[in-house]
View 1 (tube, one colour):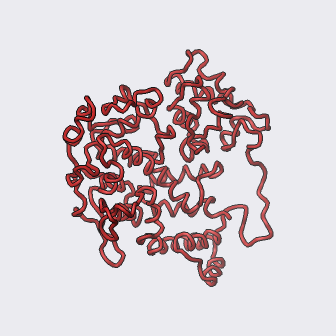
View 2 (cartoon, rainbow, N blue to C red):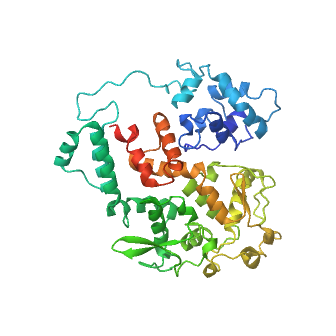
View 3 (cartoon, helix red, strand yellow):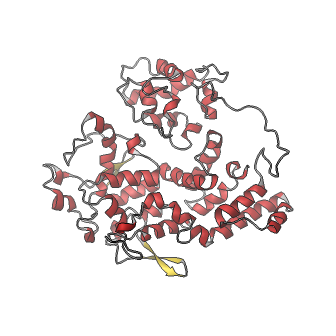
Length: 464
């Protein structure tokens, strides 16, 4: 099961049939520094043996969670009682491994698994290798930057010269090397590292590409999407503009890129643009022929915020939803838990053409004009929606809310962490990762390259 978990604390603490979409956020609100929250939300195994059966920790927690409140717990009772319940079971040892529940949660180990125990004891330096295995090794980081960002190993003479430097000079050289490598075609050129990082967000399909190297059914040119992504991730540019840009990025010759106000293949007018979300390729691929394009909202949520509605991540139910304007049966109990969040997320996408009428780009009458006969209430579909509990009037406001969210900052930092460190943040790396994404949103001003300078100083990157 993915780190987000499908049922999480809600199933382990409520009745077996009552999932709690609020549980992941409630846990991380109660224990924001917990390693389990570093990459998003805790896993099912925190409270479950086999969902919905509770493990030993889940049983302890259930016994003390809002004991005076009626069962099944309401969302408000659940949220209101969780912090006190976690504090109450903190001194207990659910798995009898010698570490109490609070210590396990703080270390990122599993309080119901006796084989998952916080690491204790000092590191013993290895005498068998060239690297310092007990902490940050500048020489190791130096070689790693060359490989990861420049694309090849440093010359032996350069490595020897680096090792001979004093510690402060070594750190300065690391940052100078990173700056030089970040300007190379290997990092920011077409098909370079950053370009390839956009693959899962763009999802290119050669058969329907237009423009250069067009396919047999040319519907949209995804090169524009890649160019905007690379532009926002490099130099001193604001990464949020991948979602908020009212401009396009075009090739300028010799591998360079430039901002432009219009592109002949991009029909959405400036005041209705929302970065990649309103690029023709995104709309062709995700809206297609759909009146209420839930796929578009779900993909944007997943690709740019790291939240998967299908896995019950990022759910913030909206009162009165789902309204089921297109008569798809989403009010059924099995569907409503997700669609109460997904449908309000989707409404702002509904005025942008995919394949039908795509030359028009944005059309405020799109649903009524093209889809009114699909269902009796179809024409009542609003354009205004709700993002993470925040009302938004249209997709431009949706994109601004998303770009300024913690989830966007966390997901952007996680993309580069995976790229350079090689895996999702581990429990032991949670403190460094949390500091990284918060600094990206704060002192780094959403500049990816500033964040990367902080990343190469982490032990996760520089320790062998």
